[in-house]
Image (tube, rainbow, N blue to C red; front, side):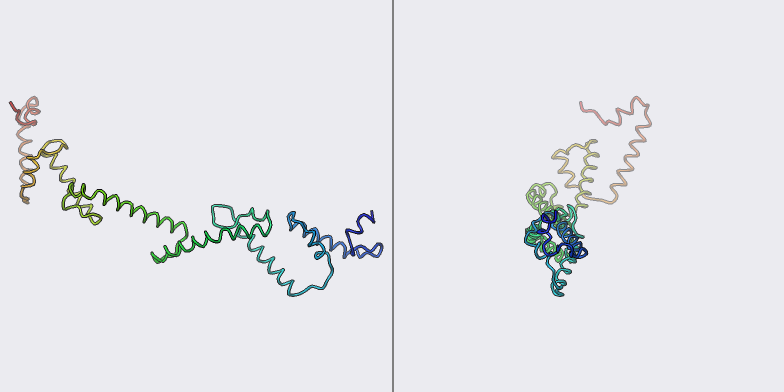
Length: 244
């Protein structure tokens, strides 16, 4: 047994004069190194890990700083969809983690520039998702303007002077459409298109403030006259004169 393990323990084993406290400390240190290496080959590092020596303050500071930085990095690892390094990187080598991070530098840099430029345009700080959302809205608006320009001739023919492209007063158009619908109902008693002659007469009409009141008075008088007849005649009278 002694012969089998003496070579592996190296200078830490000195037979009966072995310093067991020193050997125990070395074994604990070796176990820590193996656990931290997560299966990586420590063949070349073993001689350095197990070698006695005076602590070098400069190297110790570098080691402590490295440990602190790695612990800080471990603390910010998150799963998707957040933009950050993934916890799975802990299962690989430091070289693999560095490669993963470097591969993401360019797209992250591009995203940062994109977000900064959009934020500068609106004078407000943004996240990447907010910047993409705003640019999407702008693209949708540009597409709507393009479709509007494609329908320019048709819309001008339909709405006349009311249509002025992107500056069109939508409320004025809605009011005009409602007025046209009311005129059609009044003339045809249904929401049916006017005849060319009716359109001509409506276009030539002169607005007057008293017309609405006169029309209401006529409508009331008409309804009162119809109500004066028995119910069997009211439907025929309300329908108007029949053509022979």
